[in-house]
Length: 311
Image (tube, rainbow, N blue to C red; front, top):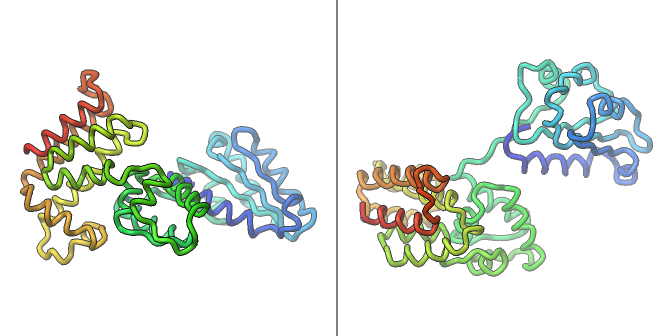
């Protein structure tokens, strides 16, 4: 259960490939959906005996749709069928821990709660997931994926899986490869915008936001603001460091990118950085329609970068 569905899907896939012997999977694997089934049907399936293998697997996908009746599983979960493995995929929310069924599952089974990664953990996860597919990443390529896809692990994984069809094992992923295969410009993206803002390069900022404004589907304004906010938040933290050598650990970034914060710290004082963070909070609201007066997103982006560079 939990708000990060990627891990739920991964564990479910692993169970489907291991619990039931391959020759028996067609007979001893049952997959149902919370929207289309009842607790009674789940219990009936779980109480059956395996037809060909030593165990049977019952997977309830989207089990969160059974939230109102989930407590009816308490009797079964208190004394589960030993030959059955029942998997409840409770996505985007959690079972109320006060429910009797939660306590029964905790006593007689296993509960895993999945949570989204923090923004500063996504880059490291991409590198680890890349190893799973046999890839190595240049630091800029990782930053581009984070800027483009945010913390949506499922979406990131799909893009990495697609690369396996075009690249050989052991390939090094560069910004050019991201641009060619994922369709995300290596020159006009949120990552490059944060760098241009860090250098107070207004002309380059305008070129980038013009491109992004013309391609809003690929560059949602709220996501862009999140990327830029994270940059200036780390810059604020950099200003507070007693020992600059601690920057990679404290900021949660690759040592490769510390130079970007060193340079930006010379362009923005700590007080100016705090003002930028306040500006970004204001434009985050505007990007969601609060106080924007129906201004086009492209114009809001231009206005935002002008105010940031001018603090």
